[in-house]
Amino acid sequence: MIRATAASLLLAGSMAVAAPALAEDDWIPPVTDALTQTECGDCHMAFQPGFLPARSWDAMMDGLADHFGDDATLSPADTAHIRAYLTANAGDVRGSELARDYMRWVRPDGVPLRITENPAFLREHDFRPEVWDRPEVVTPSNCLACHRDAERGSYEDD
Image 1 (cartoon, helix red, strand yellow):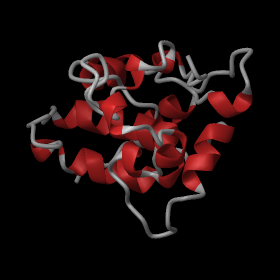
Image 2 (cartoon, helix red, strand yellow):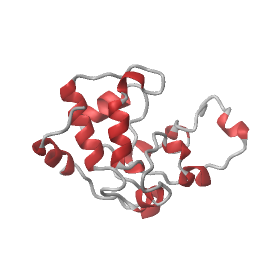
Image 3 (spheres, one colour):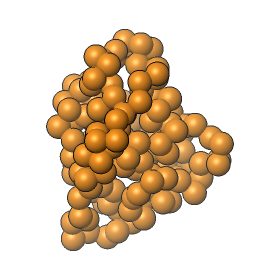
């Protein structure tokens, strides 16, 4: 397992952004790291690190060879950089009210890998099955289908 250097952790920690003028409970700091945005966003929306605890991001980065059925393996340097960014900005490290709401449902020893399985997510997304069957939605992890500004951290009901 590759661990980030102190310098990369400092860099990752300095990438936090201020909340826009939105309701605090609808906002989570967006992904501001270019490499994380590029590598993770190549296949799906780059999910905000505040939705999971640092230990979950560590587990995710350790399992890139089988990332939900795909091989998402990166170079050791890119893996270390993205790991440092995700863990430094994880929901149990820093975050908005939305991140804190997600973290309060995670067991102290829990290592969730899917944001969509968090009770906070399930409570907010208790929709009829036909909503998930819409062609523009397809999966609960397709945040952009309903939250147009999700990549900027806004999860206001659109």
